[in-house]
Image (cartoon, rainbow, N blue to C red; front, side, top):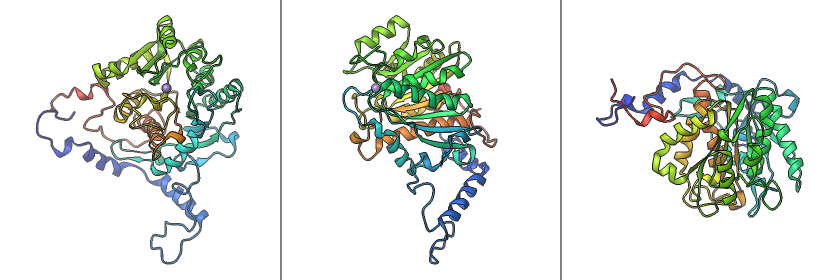
Amino acid sequence: MSNGGDRLRREDLQGTWGMEAEELLEGTKGKERDEARREFGIDAAESIRDRKISLFARGRRSNNGTFTGVDFLEDMRKLSSQDVIVMGAPYDGGTTFRPGTRFGPEAMRRISGLTGGYNAGMGVDLTESLDMVDAGNINIIPGNLEKSFDQIAKGVAYAAERGIFPVVLGGDHSIGYPDVRGLSPYVDGNIGIIHFDRHSDLSEYALDERMHGSPFFHATNIPNAPPQNLVQIGIGGWTSSREGMKVARERSATVITMDDVDRYGVDRIIEYALDVAWRNAKAVWISFDVDSVDPAFAPGTGTPVPGGLQPREVMRMIRAFSREGLAGMEVVEVSPPYDSSDITALLGVHAVLECLGTMVKNGQLGKRPEIKEPPYDLAKPEAKRDEPRS
Ligand SMILES: [Mn+2]
């Protein structure tokens, strides 16, 4: 545990631990991938000294179009032993006002080329630790919510049935319902839902249909996804739904407003949310609506609300929730037409990577070498209450 008050020592730094951890990470898979890409991309021009560079760009940063440049799973029948499957659900027919989230998966995949699999602070290399594939997009049916829901639910079920961690890139928040529906038959017990949002999304209908303000009304009608295990973080502001608050009250859901986060602090909120989501539950699903984050950081979304979470707060919460293990995750409401410099799409990508990296780090997913404990871990709620180092 790092020393909160006294003079810092080099060994108190996460950076020092990260340097040591890096040496223990494997490099085999990354090398294999580089070699395959060099082979397919053929030899570079003679003047190029680094012979690892191929002539034609392959893989990451080459516009191969997949999430972080992982392999595209051409044949879906070959989904069997992978750790993670990324799938797009480009549906925005559930949007009641400003659309555009149908381009969310594409935008997140494109900007994900900026990122690598390695995180210095986390001491994780996803390239080495995770067998992750990108399934491309689920075919949604424009103009038909219910058929699109059936497609999305079947896609998530296909992954869950095989025990593969699904990451669903939305799409508007209406997909939250079919995502949980697809997962539910494969969880032997109750599912808790941790829902980041400025909006409560608990109305039965909006404009007579199950739109993007309705997913958790319907999800919590699923027998093993009870509303008592639904915890909503970031609710409030001037697009609030009276209907949603009424449903939350009637069903005993948990509503954590932005002011609650301000008042009680991220660490206590983490502890409380975990307690609610996991109470008599066997699995937890994270639904990350990018509009939970302040529009200063996440402008690319249909229904922004000033005064939201900061990215660092969200990342710390996602890490803390992922430490305990998750059944899957969705990122919704990234609307590229309203985005600026791809920052909202990039935030969505990072939310996924924080989740996957933490699960790897804590042995919930994939494989990683044994590495000594870091000097502190902010994903542990107690981390900020530092005891002097012994
Ligand atoms: Mn929202």
